[in-house]
Length: 449
Image 1 (cartoon, rainbow, N blue to C red):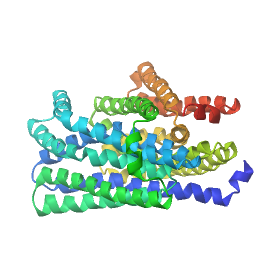
Image 2 (spheres, one colour):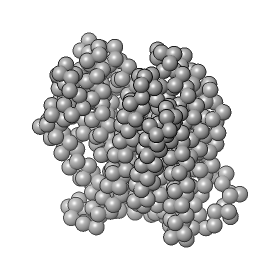
Image 3 (cartoon, one colour):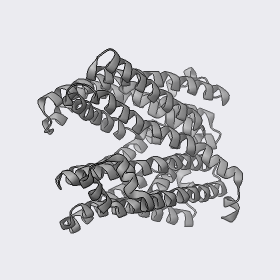
Image 4 (cartoon, one colour):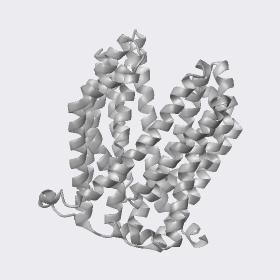
């Protein structure tokens, strides 16, 4: 263990993968802020409401298909570690084929999706009109958006985090610039915001394919045309892995959605305070995600090479730095929590309510870091079934805690969320420790290929 912690080269490898992903993640909330600022300067509130609702519909739809990135990262990293160039190439081609197939289904069924959402929405007719307008345009960006998941996952699995970073930064910068031009310059209102995102997504896909071609040539992978006829071979494993990660994502979305909607029933100040605190929870996830991405790529590579020692050293180094970052975040929330909250809201009642629940947030980094890291381990190991099962257990724990302590109101909600995050890490840790001690982790992964 001490040898791994003293290995400067190993630490550099972790940061070479983690830091670019942390930096690129920062552009995601920045894009949301710019969207809100640009649309928020129009003359009617329903423009902003329409973009908010339509954007939520797109975000949830695409987010649930995020398994395309995770599965691609794990499978590609294993092929890279095994020096199997054909398998590495096939992962990309199969991922893109699946992404474009799912995108076609979304485009064909988007009217049905919109109808279901609006049936259960209490938004005004004006907000629904502009939300539908935004969603109906943005859905045409699905082929590019889903392909970008695969491209990012493949580049990361190929141990290159710098190109995915530039892909995200450049794509979101294009989106921001076009937002300003189309909405404020040309006066296209909601249509302009949606069109800006679609153009940015296709620009990102073209840039991503260029990055892929560079990586492809650098690694001397086989000609892609020679592999097209074999794309269907071995696709079952990809579909099973994607199915399990999709079900995991559904459970995750269920817990966070319940947190939002149940908080709204506890009063305006509570829902506003929760919104402030949840924005910080998202900040924690962006920081931890960078190290989880590094874990995915490095674990997958070690497993592909069947190198138990490299796998162990990867776990030690990445866990060490995740713990350092989590401790710093916890100390920041404990020491400067009220001041940080005041940066988000200047409403005294909301500030007071947020400070009341601040101790729960302060505990989040140290509790949640384990589920992020272990997610990275199991994604790198392409073990979707274990991730799915642990998320199901964590979701049941979430609702059990809420049911038992719901009389405590928002405190019960935060206790349930903390238990949810903790159980995700605890259940995956139990599975991993068992398999590691039995010396079956690498063997079983290899057997599942």
